[in-house]
Image (tube, rainbow, N blue to C red; front, side, top):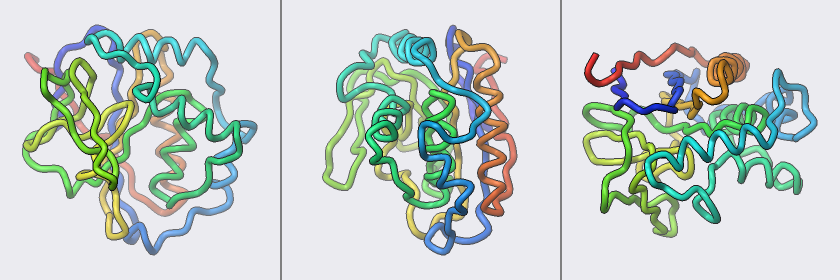
Length: 214
C-alpha cells in the first residue's frame, strides 16, 4: 500500500511494473525511442498551462520550483528541444516519453530498493538526499516526496540515487505527479505510460494507494 498524506492539489497515479528481464538486457524498440522527440506522435501535448499547474503543485508546501529545482518535466522538454534527449534504457525511456508529451513529472524507482512503509508527504525541515553519483544533494523541505523507511527518496524534481534503477532492476514503481488543476491528465498519462511499458513486454498494475485518515 502507498499512503498519501492529504494535499489539496495532488492527483497522484502510481504503477507497479515488472520487467521481462533485467534492465541491462532490455532494448527500447524504435516505436519507443522515436517518442523522445517533441513532434512525435502522442495522445497529448504540454503547454505553458501545464507547467504553471505543476509548479503550483510543488509550490504549495513552500518549496520554490525554480532554477535547478524546477520540475523534471521542464528539463526533459528543454533537452528534447535542443536534441539532447536520447535513449537511456527501456525503463527510463518509457517514463521520459510519457513525461515529455504530457508535461507531468514522472518518478521511476527500483521497487526492490525501497524498504518499509511507503508514503507520499511533504518534506520536513532538514530532509535532503543525494540525487547523483557525484554526491550532490537536494533540500526537499516543503516538496512532495515519496518516503520509505529510510526517508525521502523521489519527487517531481529529482529522485534519490539510492533508489534509482540499475542494470539488474526488474521491478519498478512509477509515480505520475499530477494535479487537480489539470483534470484527467494524470489518468491519461498513466494509461499511456502503461502502454509504453507493455511495448517492452512488462507487466503493469496500478499500485494501490490510500489517503491517510481514511
